Image (cartoon, rainbow, N blue to C red; front, side, top):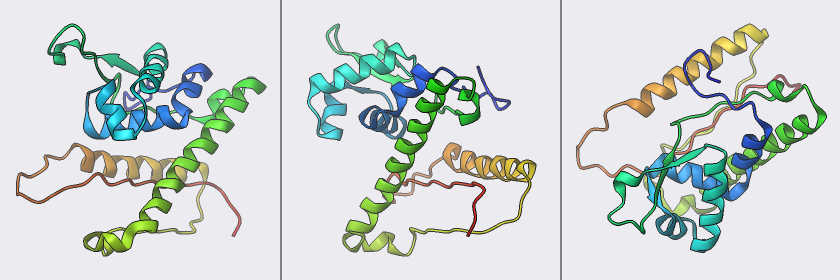
Amino acid sequence: MTDPDGVPTVTDSRVLAAMSHPLRRRLLDVLKVYGPSTASALADRTGQAVANISHHLKVLAAADLIVEAPELARDRRERWWRLAAPELRWVTGDFDDDPSRQAVAGAAVSLALDRQIGLVRAWHAVREQREAWNGAAFSVDKWLHLTPAELGELEREILALLDRWERRDVPDDGQAREPVFLFAHGVPAEP
């Protein structure tokens, strides 16, 4: 299933559970940021054992979240993996039809938020060592008065902006570029 923008939408709770495991989520992130990889290279990037990475790659492949990239292999023993789709979306409301599916969606939300907050906390723990980024890294929060339709419109505008930056041609200007993590949440809340 895809959304109106053609982005695959996860509605199977088994797929959501597979992608929500902390290490598997990290593997998906590494593949998104650095492109196709082998289990050995993924183990090096994550500090995990190759056997552990191989196990989690099998789970991700069984959930159709990653696919083999045999054209990258130098020999028959080497196995390369890539994301099945460059991005995925899921909506918690799609899992409201069954309490067990709701539980998976709730856990997925919690684990995703833990991952996002963890990445931001890790930056702040070492930011003094990265002075060049101190003026660039940012945090923002706003209180807006919106209807559900207006929040949906805001989401589409933010996604369009992020898509433009993600798909831009990166200039070959000799400047070092690092992966930058950006996340935003828009939820009804009381101050």
